[in-house]
Image (cartoon, rainbow, N blue to C red; front, side, top):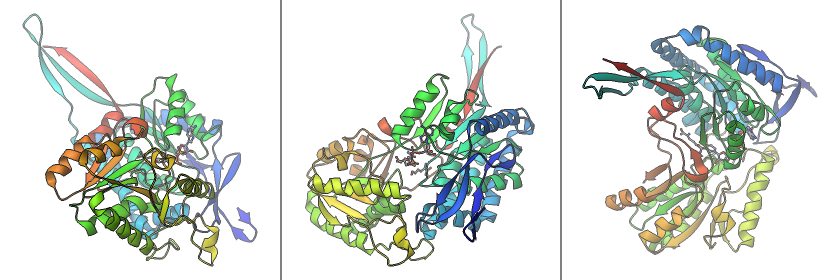
Length: 491
Ligand code: NAD
Ligand code: 6OD
């Protein structure tokens, strides 16, 4: 497409092995400078219908007949192809999100390949339970379970770690023999579409992986979740969106897996390794400009080291380098959109109204170049709020934390758990017993001790309360993406 004198890329839907346009298009914006990098074809109800039909039909084709070994081999080929096109994925993800290239190179793209490899290996090794059963007449029966695909899985994902989170669901779904229709975030459509090319190269049959682009309400997302021929929905995004999707799928009593928002706590004891903890908490608060569901927005610090800690984190925050995502020294990118920056800035304003002290940040950086058209915001540290303040209760999803002091371990545990969310927590101490004790009292799905976002893909991942339903990761993913049929044989 031609815009002015420049050619603008068109990002299409991918249905039944073909790239297809739609009736409407919308702009894909680079958040680092506000420029339009592509036009995205929105999938209407007809196209979503076509994608679901293609996925249904692929279940009955070559894909449905493949043995586990061959399916796993093709998923390894997908991983190989992602690695072979590493730089394309990297450029597309950085342009869509504005995240520093150094981060996407280390985190997003390698994890996409790793997601396919781990689930390819797991499905080959996965065993299922069997029982020898004594029958009432003194004989025996044998019970064993077999794994079958759910069918067509609808996958809806957010913009913060687009390829990582999409492949985290696509890989196990395909490993279990399902076909998928994915709807990536409207803010970050590029890498899901590139993945379609990779699927073709890796010999994934047409219709197994379909991509439909568009928005949520009254658009593609809703058409997909409402579709009667989708067998299960897996979603990552805001808790409120999860609640809406739950209503949509309720009538069909479909399985759902929800990875939702968080208001995560970090608990720092005076006996922690101070430097390591400052570095760890800085990552936990500011990585990806605070746009990771696992980020710590509430930091609780033992009174004895409170002032030193606040000073140390301030110094660290002020040493971070916002800038062009393409420069290797940059470690703070923009927020995803103008609208999201307005939301985060409204919390910075609210924090002041609620009586916070702004230790550092609180505004928008200025560059004197095209980055001023982007959606940058300053890393921000707040103190002095009451535990009932909205800024301490509500997910902000930006580079910001509030630091509160505590005197006792019990008080720290109580404050950390005083939230409707329950995704992740981190505990920082050199006392091993205390580390275990406090970690086990956290009402969350994932607790890290002296680290944060350190992942082993075999472990359960998910949240409690408003943070989600179910667990994915390792065998938990395999169990979500398959139906078990128990077979009982009288011997
Ligand atoms: P969002 O809920 O606004 O959007 C996520 C996806 O849902 C997008 O693709 C969007 O188009 C779609 N969507 C929106 N409304 C819909 C509807 N009514 N029906 C169907 N689809 C709909 O979330 P976001 O702003 O993209 O992402 C940020 C949020 O995601 C934060 O709350 C963050 O904590 C959460 N998140 C959670 C995890 C986790 O693993 N728990 C991971 C990443 C992000
Ligand atoms: O690491 C993962 O598997 C995962 N689901 C991370 C989620 C991060 C949220 O933004």
